[in-house]
Image (tube, rainbow, N blue to C red; front, side, top):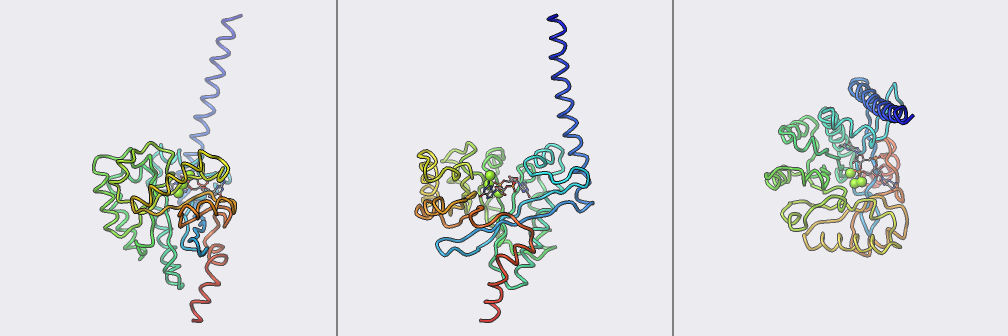
Length: 285
Ligand code: C2E
Ligand code: MG
Ligand code: MG
Ligand code: MG
């Protein structure tokens, strides 16, 4: 009867909730051991300078291959890392590893390769963030001018009223600052001009349907002209076609990132694919 149906519906939701909670718990338990088990790795995706079209840097992207769960994509484990607080040790690991890699490329003859690192809102909000950065620079010998901190638009919006001072502090430490996922949050443009940010990263969702989609064309063009007026550079992510590239370059975008150029790859592959020929050229001249 109706009562049974109601109970079954309830049971259905309860089971589904349990399944979700269980999934989360499994992820969290496995993630808790990921660092000590050496299951984390950074992959690097090239960023190309326009119009010359050579590598100017890369974005470091976290990869997790769990002994128990196999390969888990960032969109599944980053949220769990954030709610469990594990993003703090994981974020430290990412910073240290990416800084170490920048230093290594510099010592191999490529001090010009900039490494962009994603910073979680939780990590950024944490009071010890600046101290951790300073320690990691000391520890690794990385050049902060070649380290780009990618902070999401929503992280900046959630930050406290000291946000502008903090951004100036990071800038004074020598870091390059990029606003990631630009256009997906709710930033007021008036607020934006107070942020001492070097770069805006146009989100992939606005690049995907360029140049055909009129709305995305308008958003991309507006972002590029806004950035120009505010003295910021624009990085476009998710570039997959020559037509997208042409549209963005015509609009003044100076740095492109996407599968059109290359997918994220392990450091050794990145070096072989993107840096080795040029290292040889530098050595022989
Ligand atoms: P994001 O920072 O916006 O990174 C760009 C994402 O777009 C990456 O996904 C990259 O692999 C993907 N991508 C780049 N070019 C293309 C393209 O041409 N086509 C398509 N379809 N995708 C492209 P990924 O590596 O899965 O990372 C997803 C998100 O996870 C990142 O978005 C970032 O928010 C987060 N994330 C990744 N690594 C870290 C990390 O070390 N720390 C933190 N806090 N978040 C991270
Ligand atoms: Mg990013
Ligand atoms: Mg992004
Ligand atoms: Mg994105």
